[in-house]
Length: 179
Image 1 (cartoon, rainbow, N blue to C red):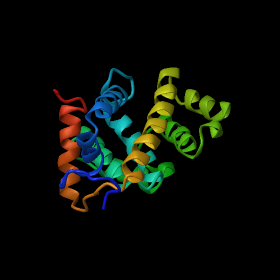
Image 2 (image 1 turned 45 degrees about the vertical axis):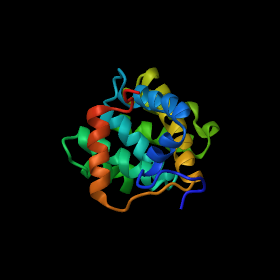
Image 3 (image 1 turned 180 degrees about the vertical axis):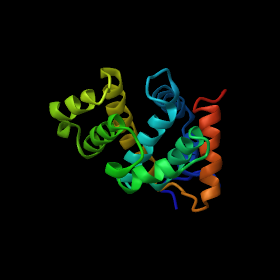
Image 4 (image 1 turned 120 degrees about the vertical axis):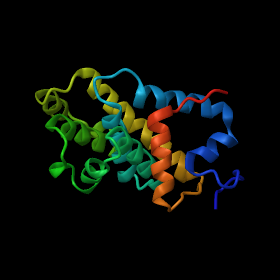
């Protein structure tokens, strides 16, 4: 049960957005830029970063919804996302993405844990400064989103089909809705 009165049937951050539309606008716009804006990392890769950080934060709603969005960007194939969640080291992603996941995991634990060596490894595998920047910002933002969702005790569905549908909607329509 949520710690504040939220509209019944609205899961996770969706219920919080309905409760506080004035903050919802800024948070939706941030997600839109980070996960769907112009970038050399694909939206699927960025959604995987969001899902991975959310997994590490034990935020089921964000992990499953953004994992489903990543899968939707990959033609509905969740195996890549599942592989990252199981073990980044053996996941079927590029060495560049593995290096970026390492940076994201360190940001999730504490921003000062990211080292020059971590960034150098990412660069050695082809990461640009913009990709490193955006990885850090996605990881930091999803720590905030995760704590927002979990800190207010939002309802988190257990039906995998609900997450698949959310993921398809997020991948197809994005995060900014007409007001």
